[in-house]
Image 1 (cartoon, chains in turn blue, orange):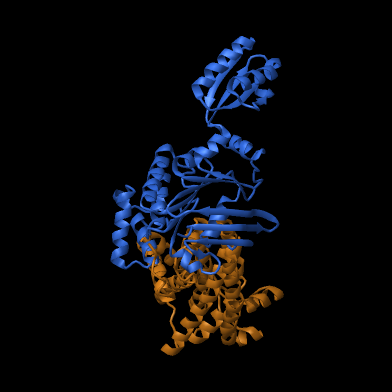
Image 2: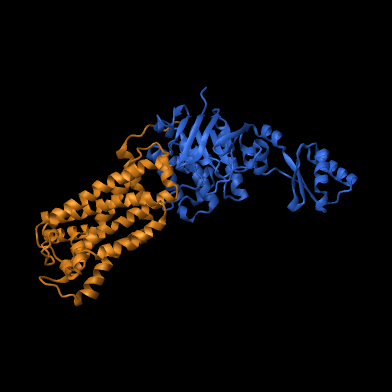
Length: 318
Length: 265
């Protein structure tokens, strides 16, 4: 069975700024693959190349068995794209939008109308099908946008940061839709800035930074390498920060706790949340170090990058 | 599931064109405003200013109606540019380009939609002209030729609008263009004789493509023309064909080049 997406040494340069710098990526058919990275990591550029919107500077890419440069028409027949901004015709209503995209996928008039109705119902938009999209809320737009990407039940669906700017309810709706698609055998490539989102949806995750893949694995593998959770300790006396770092590091068996003198903070990855909390409290007390605050939390994207790459993510200056 | 192969440019263009009709059906108020704006200009100039403008060889409306028709066609540039810019800005163009359609159907549909709306606008203007007292005096063949020249100018402006819309991609440039069209409109023979302008300005006005179309349309309708001994005024018919053809020869390749370059940015 061929891979749904195969990318080799893909590069793209805008002017003299490299957006992709030798990206390799393989996505097996019928899986949900997360592409995780900060702004400017090259996620959107990769999606635009894979959906034939952008010509790469070098390397090769194929989607659903077709080369994006040699046979873009064949690729377009097999993909769905949901970009970062809801790409809808605001002058038309929801039904007209889906009907338009259905017809442009060359469904017949009746098939397009039928599919539009089906998708409106599936995304709880049937009641507002006659309302112009210009009056839709952000969540409704996003749902309609997702529906538009599913008109033909694509082999490969590209979702570029599908939940950015959505409230928790809207995010939940999108997540549910992605899960049910995956259940139907659609291959999904999903870009996100949120580790949590990749964790919820993707079977495998590629971490991008500076236009390259810096890590890949299942979410569990990645978390095992980054430490699923972190413990943050704020000490009362800044002079005790170094001592506190050693004590906390020993208590949770972390090699390199991070310290932030400005916030009098020691932060370390932990594997077992409750055991780590108890051990840290006991160790601090035994060492006579007064803590102002102790908290357990999920790692931030920056910390994931720090652990995977040894450097903070490169921020796009733009 | 694999979508069927595209049945071709004509089918895709028809589907895209229907989208334009759906927009009109959704926004009848906006359509009416667009149609009424040139009529309003006509009425303002005929009744508010026309009384004070003494013109030799005929009534002011006989000069003005062909001029405003040419102006309306040239101003169509804005409409094309706005429509295109919106599709680019909202990411809709990206979605179209990711669909299994003949890519150029998007541009062809834009042209068809805008030409239909301009033809409708022309019809409304001709009726309004008749109502304010304008008449044509030559046969139907000449009248149709006049309409043909007007639509030719519109087509040239349409492709200029496509190029500018693809170039801008944002509404800011649209506003600039909406302001800049006014001096270009007045620096022509649309409202008054270029011979009344300072010498060098008058010369530019004589050579304005809008002037060429306006003068040629005056000839074809049998309406009086401004007295002028400029070469451009004597060869208005030639220029009314040559200018739009030249503009098309410039802007169609520019627009298509820009279109192809979308894949690089």
